[in-house]
Length: 196
Image 1: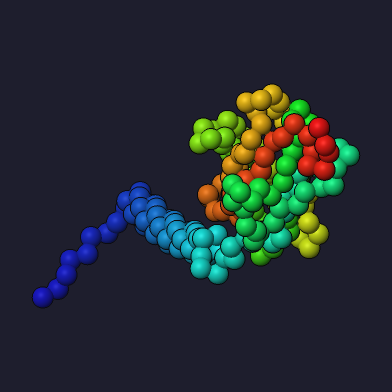
Image 2: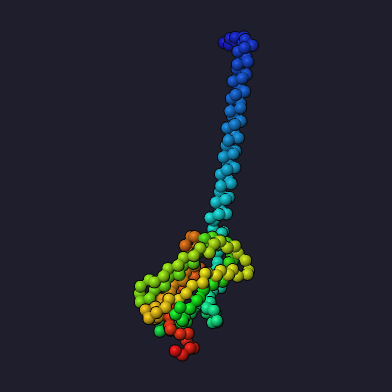
């Protein structure tokens, strides 16, 4: 059996050639799209493993210290571990005296983002103060970072005197805790070594 071949007009041949070129072009674009998609997926998987992978080191705050600075007095330094109970107050402040808090810490392993200081104080079970201060972002380094808060004044008067409980926390934006200390102090009419 023989096949019948019809002669093709030049116009029809041109149309067929254009259609074949368009099909080739679409195939090439599809291959390029597939390659682009593969490259994008590879890049995302690599970024994902470096950002949230198991190899990422958790940031560490070493030697966190809290200083209570009162003009004319020696600095009080709080660093864990210590024992503080209502009967064994860590320190005494004079009423109506100026003071400020200072932190120092060393960051290692990885940077810390959104570091925040939270200080909550109670007297006789009633919260009398809560302070939150954004400290910022800190990169790892060997030298300690130092951060000072603004100067404040201790309360005064008969009702202000007595024992206070304070909880000081330092946390980051992911709620990881780097310092969480609870201590007792008291406010008196005079400094401990002064006689009224």
